[in-house]
Image (tube, rainbow, N blue to C red):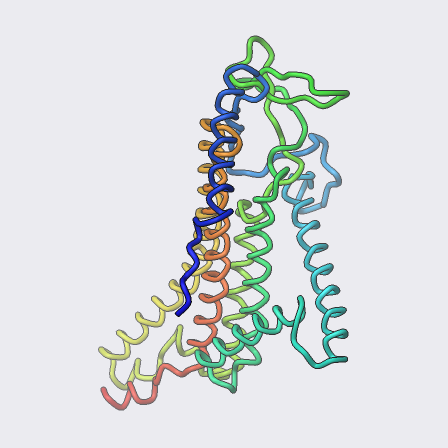
Amino acid sequence: MTKKRKFFSGKHRWWVLLFILLGILSCALSTWIPMLKPVQPHLQVAPEKLIEEPLFTLPVLGDFYLFNTLPTLILTLILIFVLAYAIKRSAQRMEKDLVPRGLAGAFEALVETLYNMTENSAGAKFAKQIFPWFAAFMIYVLFANLLKIIPGFETIGIMHHAAEGGHDIGELFGNWYTLLAGDAHGEGYVLTPFLRGISVDLNFTLGLALISVFMTQVIGFRAQGWGYLLKFANVRTLFSKPFFGAMDFLVGLLELISEFSKIISFAFRLFGNMFAGVVLVALIGSMLPVFLPSFIYLFEFFIGLIQAFVFGMLTMVFMSMVTHSHGGEEHAEAH
């Protein structure tokens, strides 16, 4: 009979003790060294401009500025391409010995799991159409959510003068400075980070929501043809049975409103949860030294993972639902 190994036994308890001691040490040092005192960052909903001058001006859209979510978007795409290339190389090596292992083996298991979930929900007929959107949304949103918890995000940037709520700065070396705790004694500064998580930009979440809802309608139209439009304007029995026909027509209008509400729900659910995590990390980090908020970052990791799965899963479920007819003919006969 084998004994179960406890997590906090052996060397694990010493790691826990080490981090507790480091937390106590950081608390003590922050009271003696001003530069180690935690500083509450400047928080705002909209992304910040890295430069005040516009990059270019479009005739209809107007000025285009460099916001700090744009470099993050480019970095996210680069990392996804790098990951895809690494998986391709790993898959080529895996083909030689026919043993699933390494990065390609892990990704193959993930893809197979997601495809089975899609097939169980939508059926084998429509799984190939829905799966790419489900997997793409989930993986992309997961990258966007987890990238912002990497050290350096939203903590390294450009110092700007603040009209109110600014801090004093202390020189580190060269042209590098750090914010000091407490209000400014004169001219204050705030930090505009070079990189800000794109999942806390409402433009990004709204764009994903528009794509998700639009492609849901496309798949519904492919599955049901022109009959799919009767879901929103059911006029089958409007003249033959006026009372029930009017009720069906009103239900169709409610379905149309619900499709638009999905855009708002998708966009604000992802944005709200991820922005709340930023605020939580900022507040905890400004009250406690560097080692103690690590549990909050672990919580942020799970929130980012869950929100990516929820966004992709809802997209897959909504796409699966529109592939099935609402049974308008049977409903009309029942009347």
